[in-house]
Amino acid sequence: MSNKRSFILGLGHQKCGTSWLHKYLCESDLFARGFKKEYHVWDRLDTPLFKDKREKLTWRTFFKSNLMRAYKMEHSEGYYFDYFDRLIGNNKLIGADITPSYSGLSARRLEYIKRNFAERDIDVKVVILTREPLSRIKSAVRFNLDRKDYTEGINVGETDFEKALLQYYKSEHCTLRTQYQNIILEAAKVFNPEDIYVGFYENMFDEDEVKRISQFLQVEPKYEFVKVRVNKTKNTVMETKSDTLIKEFYADTYAYFYQNYPVTKELW
Image (cartoon, rainbow, N blue to C red; front, top):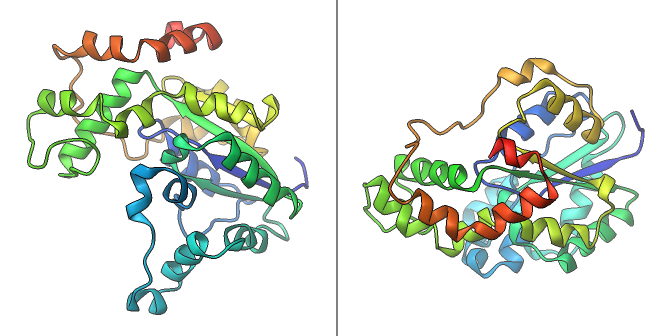
């Protein structure tokens, strides 16, 4: 294992195993666990869809240290990098920000993040988790309906799964989280191939994949995690009349992966 400090930047995607990834990192003695899994700094700064969710200064901010940290990360230049610089040290060599909606970031922002960490002698390694598009979309719809979350493209009060599916799949919330090739192409402009990990939900729980991601993260593999599931969606509808329509809408994503990651021809 390397003694160099590293920062794991999770660039997506929602319902593709990011919570599992964070839990896996937390099991390592090398991981410096911060005050949250998803810091939501760069999406709220750069992606119009999330700008209204920026942290606001209220009386509660002054009494809760984590709220103040979150506020400073979004509003104070350099605080984000300084926080992780202080966090990662001694025997803790790895930090992370695994925010699925970073899938909308540009190469310009990624270069900024990489450069600022480099100035603090911290290497950035990118993790991009994906999933067969239709399955990801259905899982997201089921998850949001179950918790009555109508903030991601589903009409308020909707209870019918297929109607919600039709409302969601063309929305900006969905395309940002499902057109995986976009963030892969942006990351490739900034990072070397060996610093980008692209994983697939369908096989990420296999021992070979646990070994591969462990080597990438530079942590000891924990093969017992092949049986661990985190935030797994319950009662996902497996087939609807809209399946073909949705697959056709994301045809470019399927084509990109079949060409560049041939394993998805079997997995998807």
